[in-house]
Amino acid sequence: MEKIAILTDSASNIKENISEGIFVVPLYVNFENESKRDLLEISPSELFARIDEEKPYTSAPSIEDFREKIKMIWEAGYSKILAIAVSHALSGSYNAMRLALESQDMEYVLIDSLNITMSEGLLVMYAKSIVGQVDSLDQLAKKIEEKINDTRLIATVSDLKYLIRGGRLSTVEGLIGGTLRINPVLGLDEKGTIKNCKSVMGKKRALNFIVDETKKALQKAEKYYLAIAYGKDKEDIAGIKEKLSDLIEGANLYLEGPVTAVLGTHSGPSVYAVSFLKIK
Image (cartoon, rainbow, N blue to C red; front, side, top):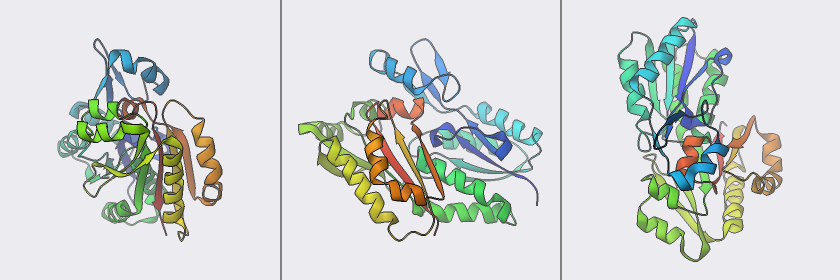
């Protein structure tokens, strides 16, 4: 079988691993006088140190950014590409990836993950795990598309002003989220847009709700991937990890880390998220 590369963007919260066939194109964090490439030129800690005073915004990779990465894939000996993009409803990255892929001669399949951050990243990691077990690119793509509905992101933020600033939530939703210390529990709908799953009083209750929902969803799962992401402060995931310790131990893959700077621009420093992918 010809070699298949997996192409994604940095909104997946996955770092590039050329030796494993994973190629990542960074989005941009833009300040008044400079633009920095996610994962490569700006860290989450730098972003959060500057976010309130400088009010950065993000932008998708250019078509040329993707073309350069596709050229790298070809030069690395790959002949086919499975491309997994951040939800088209949340970023222009999908369209830039599509236009770049259409302009070159390699065989490819482009998938809208309908996800973001580590829930998108788990689809990438699942693709990597099965790429050697399939007979064709189309078969690989079909297996990944079938898993989109088995992938879930559950997150909470204490301050919605960053999501509002970036246009990911309406001001009305933001006002609801900021009233009486209500913490919204956020997810993604079937179109890949952010939705408010539930509003609870205080961060602790929001985190407990995320833990309970994760346990309920994975109660009967035999195989699954699990990931935990955070913004500026790692300390609260200690409690999440303790309560999910059995699930972490039983996961076929467990990932943990901060959201990237691009994701942090929209979520702000108070984000905590659990993602999972049910395999069986």
